[in-house]
Length: 302
Image 1 (tube, rainbow, N blue to C red):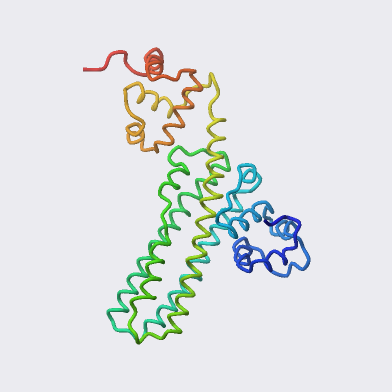
Image 2 (cartoon, rainbow, N blue to C red; image 1 turned 135 degrees about the horizontal axis):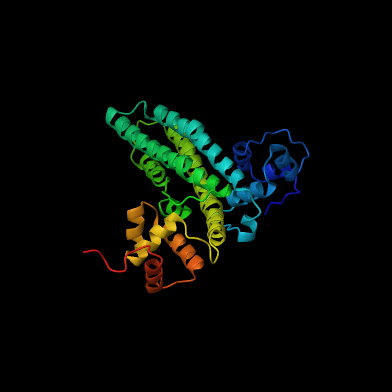
């Protein structure tokens, strides 16, 4: 494992792939004998965040504890992920595309069209994946860090729909190794496969960092927010009253979520807050509370 006091030059020498982490966290070479902590401090980055990303990057089986996750600055993780997106779309994908163009040049039009279409579909899928993270997930995390709790999203939704952007790369790899016509230059196939394997490996590590750092760290933030958002005797918010009325009317969580256009996770969070504030946990008790406080009619309307 890596540690804060080691020299940054020794860290990169241990595994050159970590040079990509330095680049994506905005660090530059020329650090001499400076330690990891020194270089991170100069770059305005938490050394704990940097070390954790490096450890997960080097060992995909490494799972940080909650105590370790509590020491990092999630803004550094977002910075790394955003700059990773820039690297993939601005460099790695373009480099692979150029290698494929050179490789397929002597092939027939049908082979060219099939590979080009397949790769184009993949790059569109990758861009869509990154756009979702940039416009939905990352702003949500920043809002959580600013204690601006959002009711219409949770990191669980991201985790549930966290698409695997590597499957098509694996298929492309099989197509290049197995089904290209014999006139294709073997050296060019090797070069294209090298670009492909490099991108595939890096994307897998990118996903592991999201799964092992981003998602559990934000889940912890949500748990803290949930625990702090409701105290016994607090007044119910307008949203909580809407959800309470839904519960009292016999609606299921998924039905309440659909009616209010929010996630089921958000409904569950509000229900826990309602129970804390009112001290009432059963549906029957909450129904009685709603009636006694004139939130719903005692008798259903005809």
